[in-house]
Amino acid sequence: MKKRLFNIMFSLVIMAAMNTHHAMGQVPPLSANVVLMNSNGNPSNNFSLNEPIRAVISLENVGIEDIYAATGITDEDFRVLLRFTLFHPDGTEETIPATYQTELPDPPPPPLNPCQVGEPVQVDAVDTLPSGWERTIDPFDVLNFYPLDRTGLYEVMAVLSMIRTYPQAVLQTCEGVTYAPLASANFEEPIVSNTIEFHIIDDDDEDGFFYPQPYGDPPDEADCDDSNADVHPDAVEIPGNGIDDDCDPETPDQVASLPGIIVVEAIRYTFDRNRRPRWTREPVAGLPVRVYDRSVSSCIENNFPAAWRNREAIWWSCNPPQATGETDASGMLSLSVPPGRYLVIGGDNPDEDPRNGNEFYVVRPVNNLQSGQTRRRYLQFY
Ligand SMILES: [Ca+2]
Ligand SMILES: [Ca+2]
Ligand SMILES: [Ca+2]
Ligand SMILES: [Ca+2]
Image (cartoon, rainbow, N blue to C red; front, side):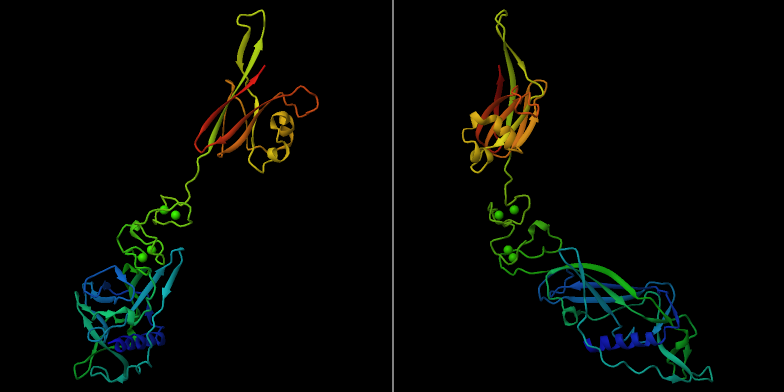
């Protein structure tokens, strides 16, 4: 069957190429349909690698009038091409070419002398396809013709190319065989069938999960690494091993560490012996605050181990700080920094000139700030 099917296809395409001056562009009311069946004979969209994929292709006259078409369409396997597209995960597509070999084309139709006309004309034997005519070719395994040897998402359609139809002027020989003058042929646009989406899947690492996912199954059933039996949707996510163990991006390999928060409150205390109370307390608004890293190889640890005494030098030389800000009207400031060891410095009246002596720096350490932790520090001015 295989050889016959594609012999016919190839010879008629050659014929069409020789006759391209004829009318083209119409599509006769012929409808093609393709179904894929698994080895049990059931329609399927999901095949294991190397499992037979049986195609059933049919053609129907869905018009209300007879169609005159070149013979072969009713009693031979009419010419048909399947167009397979493989969709790669990166979004690109690949057309899968057929692997079958064609042989030399049949000779062209001979001149014939029909009864009604005295002149020899080039004719084509035709079949009459009445309205509702339908023909289905025998199922065949597409793997015999197409190298579908990779897993993935595919699409297939049947394309019946260049069917010769005739508008009318049907001739009849004295023997009763029906012909049409070849010169009146319409060389139609291809008849394209429905499109079927299907998967070819595999369980290469034999962990019970397939790649890609079986057709219609939820994507979270797919094996995201079919070469590693420890990786599948039922596995437990192991943090930090660089692998999405459970094939679920919602359970990330790296748990993002929450920052810590340093809340600063700046207060100025003023003494007046003539008041009651003598000490008054007010927020310091607009106070520039810097948080400096104090980890092992930081600027502070390298240069100013006695940080308390060197706060002004740190302010002017260990930049940029880890975080900066200014206190609000209530003297408050909240700064978000990674977990770590820090030094908080509030710089009162920093006027860009460290030598004029009117600055005042208040420093507070924050040791071992944890992920998600909030630590409060008071910057007190007197
Ligand atoms: Ca697997
Ligand atoms: Ca796996
Ligand atoms: Ca992991
Ligand atoms: Ca995961």
